[in-house]
Amino acid sequence: MKFYRFCILTLFIITLLLLFNTFTKAIPITNEDTSIFRIDLKRRGISKTISNKNRSKLQQSKIIHKYSKLSKRDLQEPSTSLPLVNEYYMDGCYYGTIIIGDQYFTVDFDTGSSDLWVPAIECKFSECLFHNRFDPKKSPTFVLDPRPNNFTMIYGLDDGTSTVVCGYIGRDTVTLGGITVTNQTFGLATYDDLSYYEEDGVIGLAFPQLSLFETPSVIQTMKDQKKINKALIAFHFGRHKLDPNDKSFADIGGVDPNAYVGEIVYNNLLDSISSLGYWAITMDDVCVDQVSLGANNSAAIIDTGTTSIWGDSKCVKEIHKKIPGSFFIDVLSLWFIPCDTKTVVTLVFNNVPFEINPVELTLTDIMLGPLCQSAIQEMPEDIPSKIWLVGAFFLSNVYSVFDFDNQQIGFAKTKVVTSY
Image 1 (tube, rainbow, N blue to C red):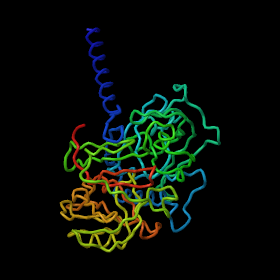
Image 2: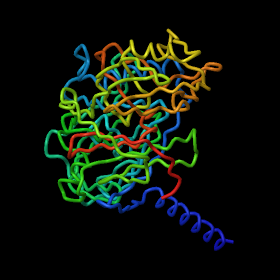
Image 3: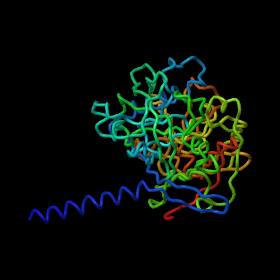
Image 4: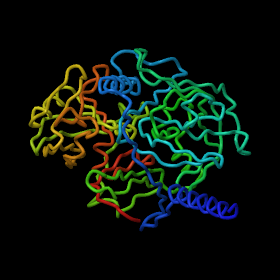
């Protein structure tokens, strides 16, 4: 009987290891101009523990803090504060696996921030215990950052909605998509007040100007250490509402023509905002059912770490006026639209229209009767007008390319990918 139990336990452990390896393994893909490396991504589910009213307040305060460099008033925290904020309480963000010092972690892939951090073994708070924690003693390649290395990340504003992550800074080998770099700077969180998200930490993929640690992103380090020929990362976010088998993944070092339809349309970065470290481009227009709203030459920050699309208040109101049955709920400061809407909203970049499928316009987990929260919301007043924040509900409709070398973002119409 003991031998039988031992065999069953052994088979169970082997099965778990095989499944884990399937999720974390790199998938090298060769196309005509380069070799690229693929990382499987998973879409985060929505938290059921946050009320709609609190969720609305959290969303808006975190957007304000994350983009405080663009704020109309000075909301910047002291120099130890990191504007590294995502809509942690919403679905629609995507995470994958990274290896730091031979230890495995899941991280949110965030083009709206620039630093990598994971929980540290020293974190004994209950929130940390549900996550993988980095143990420096288990990594012979780990070193403390020689600079003053304490940091604090403020999530939200000082209005009862903020939470805190703090810790210290180190360096170690990092493996992403099968590509290993050395001496990569990252944060080790000894206090992690975020208990509502599935992933362990965040990998920032914006530019060094946003980095609290004042270091390049992992993708830029790969290029600097000659591990990839092209410093770029591309995303295919599966549209599971249309096809539950549509895969989500990130490609490093090149693009995969099998993940999109037609040609990739590239957009040069907008200097006035990208100089601050953001991935920002010009958005030519917004259309509803092919009718232009005249939103000419707006700035659009493209952020994989944000769920919704946040836009100029006047234009967002006009969008919802053209969606039959839409309704603004004052107490929530949010727009709701019919869950079965057929309206097509289009964002235009470099004179090319990119449609948002109607099923991607609704957050079906946040319902008020027949209404669902709209994926398009008014930007908080603290952020200047004519600036849009474009998140996953648009990016799931395109194959998006973030090209560090050429300072550009590319979009192509996505297609369903069920295998590779």
